[in-house]
Length: 250
Image 1 (cartoon, one colour):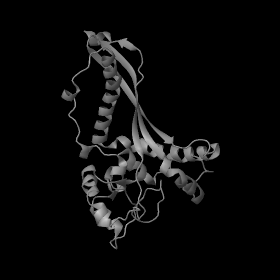
Image 2 (cartoon, rainbow, N blue to C red):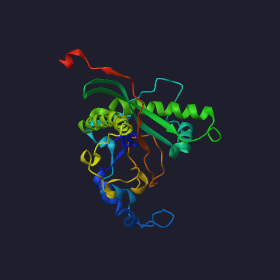
Image 3 (spheres, rainbow, N blue to C red):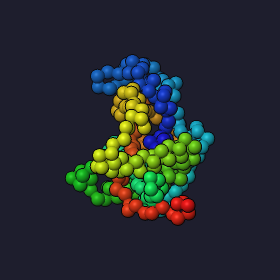
């Protein structure tokens, strides 16, 4: 959902997986990745389940908000948009999770995990000067501000974040057990995923924008394919373990 909110588009995971088996044939994709079909390209994507995320009542007006507090800066000016789109394919947003507190009482652990919305720009200083970098960060700051405000509106998103917080704790915990030669039988904790359920973004069909889509974070040409960028990162460093609270011990 992070990538969906950043790009303003959404296609249910199951529908996108089904569409991945058909879209090259439907679009008559040539070896260069260009569609040769005479069909209405957006109509085909829309029929497959692609929607403007603002059609969801929970996210209906999120891009109408003005969170820019700098009157001298217009993030959607042609100049700023052109600069951003020049580097857009090498920018990603990430959810970064970190365990902030751990308490222990015998074999019981209590932990607190926080998360932050961060970004990465995959260019070195030879290709990206500091002035341009700061301009990109200024635009990204506003985009992240909108996402952070609305990200946890849905129950399934909040549940997913809860799972990710647990995973953030379990990664260093299981690594610690491994160092002590106490390796749990992991297949009993998590069933293996089949190949058809584990795919990278590039293995799935791309997206395109409709003419009336509200999100202005990205500006692609009509019927231009693009992939969405985002990820999850876990900080596996942990704070010192504290003794559990006395009232918990009782």
